[in-house]
Structures are given as C-alpha cells and as structure tokens.
Image (cartoon, one colour):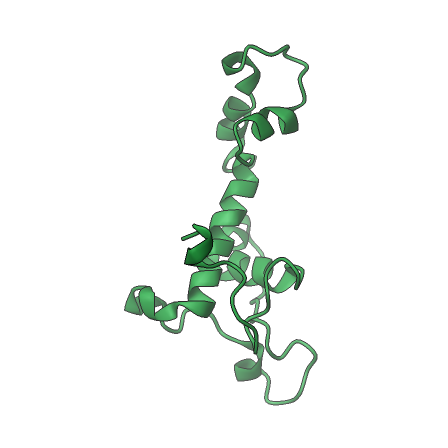
Length: 132
C-alpha cells in the first residue's frame, strides 16, 4: 500500500467540504482550491528542492553541498546524459521514495520547457515570480 494512501483517500473527500455531489471529479475539486493532489504536491516539493540544489545550492545547509552525483562524475566517458544527475539502482519501495533517488529521477525526466536543465541555462523558477 502506498505510504500516502490514507491521506490521499481523506483528501479526495473535498466534495464534502465544497458541498459538491460525491461523483464530482477530483481534478475539478483540486482546481477550485488551486492546489494539487497529495502525490503531485509531494513531487512538486521535491522538484522545488532540486531547483534550489541546482541554482541556489549556497542557500541550502552544508550537508547538501554534494548530495547528488552527476553522471559525468560517475562515468569517465562521454554519454548523452552526462549532465544529468546519476540515479542509483534501488530495489525496495523505501529506496524508491528516497529523495536522492526520486529527486534525480524527477529532475532528469522533466521536460526542458518546464524545468530548464541545470547546464548553461538561467533558472526557470525564480523568487521574482513568488516561488521560493
């Protein structure tokens, strides 16, 4: 069972709070509150952390100074994904939930027009846009 299953089920009861019919689609309910479902909100927060790691590492605590490894540090030959973060192989569900694994995977798999890659580009998310 998913580690957030109970919270997700509880959160999907937004129809009661909004006095909508129980068959109302949850996407509409989340849209009314201008928020995301729990799992997407979790992924979003991980991506915000990854953005801070890539573009504002000096603002993070020192323990995160070298938290993620890039492929060019692992492989000593040229690969197409040399500038991506290295994702270590994990077998357990707990390992798949680790920030080191999930953060690298989410960042590497994000489309370039949504999350600008961390090499040779200015950051997409900025504090000027009200996102911290």
